Amino acid sequence: MKSIFYSFLFACFFGVKCVFAQQPSPMIGFDLSELTETRDGIKKGESSLIKSYNDLIKEADACLTLKPETVTDGMLPPSGDKHDFYAIGKYAWPNPKSADGMPYIRKDCSINPEANGPKFDLARYNNTVDRIKLLSLAWFYSQDERYAKKATQLLRVWFINEDTRMNPHFECASALPGVYKGMAIGIIFGVTLVEMTDCVKLLSLSESWTGKDDTALKQWFSDYVQWLRTSKFGIQEKKAQNNHGTWYSAQIAAYSLYTGELEYVKEMVEFGKQQIREQIALNGSLPHEMKRDWAFSYSVYGLRAFTVLAECGERIGEDLWNYKTPDGYNLQSAYLFLAPYLSGQKEWEWGSVRENEQTERIALPMMKRAAKKYDSTILMQAVRHLQTLYGKSLKYDWI
Image (cartoon, rainbow, N blue to C red; front, side, top):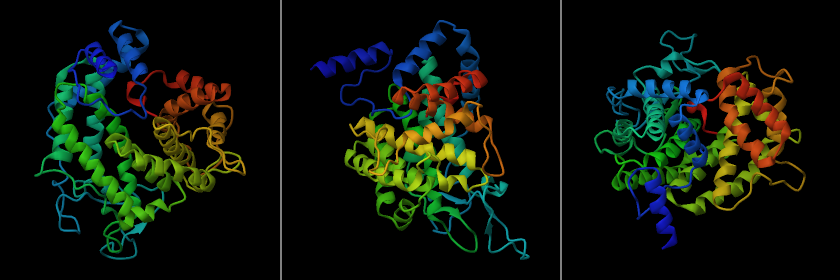
C-alpha cells in the first residue's frame, strides 16, 4: 500500500496521469531528480537555463507539423520485406575501379553521403528517433501535451502500427552492395534507441502515451533482444572486441531493463567484466579504439557503452563501476585516462582527426556521472572545464 501511495504522490506532483498498474522503468542515462530540478529552474526563469530551453522548444515546435517518416518509405530491402530496416554502411563507397561501382568497398571513418540518402532508411530512422527524444524532453520541461502527442505518433508509426512498423532486427543494416546484404556491425545502429527508451520512460508520465502503447513498444524491444541473443549477426557482434561488442552488451542490458527481463541485464553485466579485461588497457586506454582515425571520438564512444552497462548493473544491484579483474583491469582507469584530454591539460596524440565540440559535449554528462560515482577531483576538473566551454545544454544531458 505504501508503494502505491508514493506512486500516487509522484504522479500528482508532476501534474500528470496517476498510474497504479505500473511505474516507469528505471532510467539509465537521466537522473530524474536533476531533470526535475532543471524544470523547476526553468519555471523560475534561471538565466543559465532559459537559452537552452528556448532552443529546445524551438526545435520541438518545428517537429509538430512534420509528417512521420517510415521504414517502408525507401527502396525494397534485399530480404524482400519492406518492414526491414535497410541501410548501407556509413563507410561503404562505390568501387572506383569498376564502371558500375560494384562491389562496394569500405573506407574507415569516411562517410558516404549516399548512406543518408532517400533510398535507404538510416536518415529517416535517425530523424524519427531524434525527434522522439526532443519532443519527449520538450514535453517534460514544458508539460505541453502537444509535444507528447507528437512523440507518441512517431513512436506508433515507426515501432507499433502494423502497416508502417519496423521489424525488430537489423538483418539488412550496414549492407555492402555486391558483397553483403547486411552485416553484424549494423547492430550498432540500434545504439540510439537506448537513449530513446529513457525518453519514452519520461513520456509514459504524459496523457498521450497509453498503457497499450507501452505494452506494444516493450514487446518490440523484447523481440529485438531475442534477435540480438540468438541470431547469427547478434552472436557475431557479441564477439567484437571493440565498441561494437560493448554496445551489444549495453543494448541488451538497457532494453531488458526497460522490458523487465532482468535476467538478461545480469547476464550482460557479467559479460561486461570480461569485456573490461579485453578492451581496457592497464593505463585506461581503449586500444582497439586508439587505432582508428577518429581515435578520440571512438574512445569516448566506447567508454560511453561501458557507462551504460555500469548504470544498468547498478539498477539491479551489480557494481561494475568498482569491479577489478584479478590482474587489475578496471573501468575507473578509462575515465581517468580521458580526463586530462577533456580538461585541456593534454593534447590528444592518436588518430588523424581530433574531433572537439560534438565529442566533448557527449562526454560531459558521462564524465559528470563518473566523477560522482568515484568522488574524483581529477574527473571533476574535466567536468568543470567542459561546463565552462559549453554551459548547460538540455539536449546533451544523457550519458
